[in-house]
Image (cartoon, rainbow over the protein chains, first blue to last red):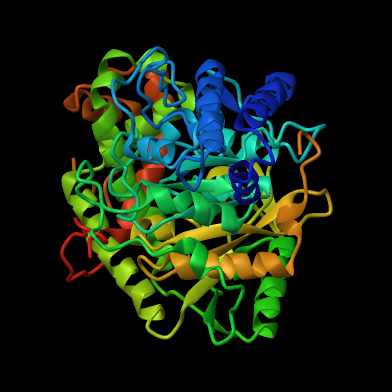
Length: 464
Length: 64
């Protein structure tokens, strides 16, 4: 994206050519990939023609001028249907843009279309019974999950039919597909980016953010999205730093914590080795690395259930009573679970959540970032319900969200970047967690790592 | 509808009663499919129910 924006601004490539090339690739491969629910070809080309005219006229250009992007189909788009990956909203056309939709357009981005996802964002595999389950581009032969819920965002960027996409993350839905699809993605601090006009899964745990090829691209895309929004009362008034300027390539003197118990020690062997190698590489550049244990983090699954399930149920309650048959079976059952959590249990979850947050904050009293695997395992096959790690067998769903969910509860910013591949050629993700509102340091470490490695430059066999 | 750790095992009939109290009318097949998930949720919540905690609910998070 960064290079594309530079080439467009420098008149080396036309936005019309760029958009048309992406639309042609979508037409060629998305029948198998199923990453888009709605392709906005006509409006994208019209915007590209306007962008080209602006370049030719010497007008002031935004940082994403003429660069195509995709939106997970839970971002409201004025005049364009927004399904949430559901049949329930299959024909719903919002009257307003989400704040981030409008901010990306104001920065010059051109929306190629609306991307597939786990129905209503309620699942970490990225399955979808209504629009088809996106195909992970890293395995041409076997239909593997992209990770979710932002599975279309992961598939489209990995396959090269979208330079950058928006995901949303309630339990890991940006970082998990970034990990499983070999991408870079960042879940900003809760309150850093507006959720106004974004269909909710759980208001107090939802985060929105970009998924791109590199940390530098994430910085480019995050900057115009971030900042206070009067439409979202949970956004912060803190100023947004210059993320691009933070990418110094330097990690010397940074204090890095390696999350051990609960994280590293339960990961698959190849994920563990990749994380240790990444930590060693950063240490070699002058960072200090020390092991860290979060003693309360094993409460996260129960606390998450206490908070997420009733929030999701509250949003869907009326539809569950009147239009339940229109949900896919897995999401319908999961949503119904929220009816059986009491108010007292919900508040107990919120009280314990404060303890989790405080414990992570305490770790940051002497550390700048924390490292962990993003997921314990690589992409599993669609329909696979269990996965082996070491000598044990574990259910896929909770395994996928094990390392990401704690930071939805605490609100800390967290990114995932590629840090290796399995013997089968499937990507592995490195999770980098930062202090509240310190996305700049998270992106700086991610970018510095990517200047030392080439994992993020490798291309998936399907698309690429 | 607060479950105590020692509460007897849920059945389809008790789950139907609980669901109806929430205004949800579910078929026997739906209740049977939901039952193990609700049981799993109960076990999960039982693990945190009696943990001592002094802090107020985290109703606001990062609005500095």
